Each structure stands twice: as C-alpha cells, then as structure tokens.
Image 1 (cartoon, helix red, strand yellow):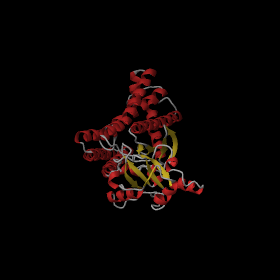
Image 2 (image 1 turned 45 degrees about the horizontal axis):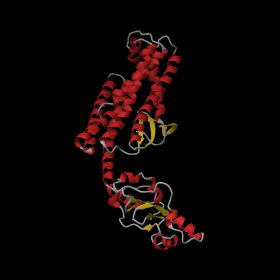
Image 3 (image 1 turned 60 degrees about the vertical axis):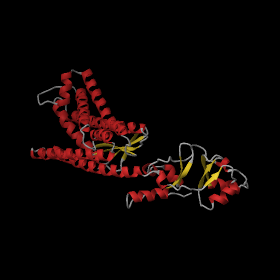
Image 4 (image 1 turned 135 degrees about the horizontal axis):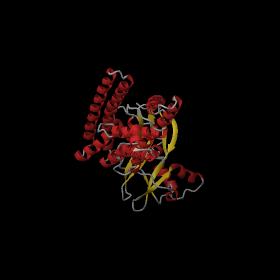
Length: 398
C-alpha cells in the first residue's frame, strides 16, 4: 500500500506530485519488461538502443499515470474536494482526496475523469501512430505479434504508449471496487438506491470477487512457469482485495461523520458582543469573564457582522482608548463562520476552527444560532469512533 512518505517530483496545477520509494523498483521492472518487448519489435537495433527507448517508454507510462490521477484531482476540485497530493508507487498511482464524494453525481464525475483522460491518451497514441505509419505497422507495434516484423523506433514507442493506455483504460473500468469502474458502479447503485453505504458494500463485494479471479489467474501463471507474471497478478489481487475492504470501512466511517451536524454539537448560548459596546465593557463583561480569545459581534438587529479578538481590545485599552467601539475593531475579510448543516467531517478539516478554537454557527440570514468549539468536535468524534484523537490541540476557546 502507498505511504505518505514520498519523494517530491513536481507541482502541477497546485497539486504536489510525489513518488513512494517502491516506485523506483516499479520503474526498474518496467524498463526490463519494455526492453524485452523492444528487443522483439526492433531486432536490428542494439540492446543499448532498445533499453534506452525502454527508459523513455517507462517514463511515458508514469506520465500517463500522473495525467490519469490529475483527471481525478481536477474533476474533484470542481466539487470543492481538494487533493492533498498525487503519489506514484509500485502498483500505479493514487490521488489523495481530502474527502469522499457526497452525491452520486460527484462520485460518477470524479471516478470517470481518470479513465476519460486515459482514453484520450490512447486516442492520441493511435492518432500519432496513423500519422507516422500505416494501420498495419501500428497494429504490430501495439500487439507485438510472434511473426517477424520490422517497425521503426518511433513507432515502437508510439505503439507501446497506445497499448499501455488502452490496457489501463480497460483495467480501470472493470466494475470492481476500488478501481474506477467500481466507483462508477457505486455511483450508479447509489443513485438507484439512495444509500451510499449499501452501494459501497455492493461495489466492495465486486472488488473482492475480481481479486479472487486475479489470484486464480496468478496461480495459473505460476503453474505455467511464468513466475514474474504470476506473482504480479497475486500482488494485484492482494492490493484490490485489501483496498476494497478498507474502502468499505472508510465509507462507513465517513457516513457516520457526515450524519453529525454543527447544530447537533454547538453551544446554543455562546458569549457575543453588541456592535455599539466599548472595548472597556467588552473586556470586563465578556472577554475576561469567559476567558475568550475572541467574540462574535452582532449589529442592532441581531445579525452577525464578524469577530473581535481579545488582543485587539486589549491593545486599545493599553493605548488609553477605552471608549473605542468594538464595531471599529471587527476583523477584516470574510467573517469566520460555519453553516448549521456543516457535517462533522467538514469541521474536522476546517483550518479556521483549528486556528480560532471555535466558530460561530451562522444561517443564511446571518443569524447566529450558536457556537461550535474544537473540543466539541473532538468529543463528537470520540463518540462516533471510540478512541479517536484529533491533533493538534486548539489554541483557545471562546
């Protein structure tokens, strides 16, 4: 399984691309396998030329994997799902998304974007092959028949690029979780049943069934004398079965976290400040008694305007200006807030909540319904997932 410890490669569209140490072994294995392929289709070339082309072809393969994962990441960005990074490892690539999909349409679009990019790359390879040679030459370069064929070095690279993207596309759309096809199947089942967890379980069963078939084929290859191929299929089978099981468990946890809303855990009577109160009164009547690092400010009609920090209030008092109104000290920018229907999953990922220690719960009419604290989020998480801990600790609590 991939880990978070990666070697950085590049940043594309603001997304960090990294490689797991196992990727270097995969790169070496890929070069050896492609080099053997090019020895067949380029019999007149020297081994050094064949393996030089194999290095270029292997790198193209990993570029195709990155493009595939970028497809997922950019599609996810459309729905407000951030990508923590793309990682290449022994068995391919993975885009680490900040959260799971919340609607069938999100799941379908995000899952389908990767295979769509791969299909476009397949079409690009086929198009270039037809431009530089005949359809017969392209066919030979893609399928590498046993018969004695002669193709150019350029066609060998194009044929490999076309073949590998076609193979990736077919493999990824197999309806077995956690492959993209399994996620597409989950999206369809989710849309039909209206139940994400049931759809995930069904897709997970398909994933484990496919893993059994792969394992059986791997043992068959071993008995046929193909030890490398057999072990490779067994490794894929183990990965798919493990990932399918983990995905079902993760989906169940995400479902639990999504059911808890900000209004379920908030304090309905938090301290707040009228906009026309002085900093002296704010300090002595609200900030100091509640040991609050900040407080929400409401206007004369009771609508939320923003927050004032205890630091700003005390700066004014220290400068000998006790009569300054808190309305003059409201923090600039978009006022921090969370909507009433914000899920526990969203609160866990909120940088504002981590920074401020709490956030006001504000509805669409700018009415303050309460306040949710980081401690309340931790407590709710512990109830949903016994033994869970969230770090780092909040810096303060209003």
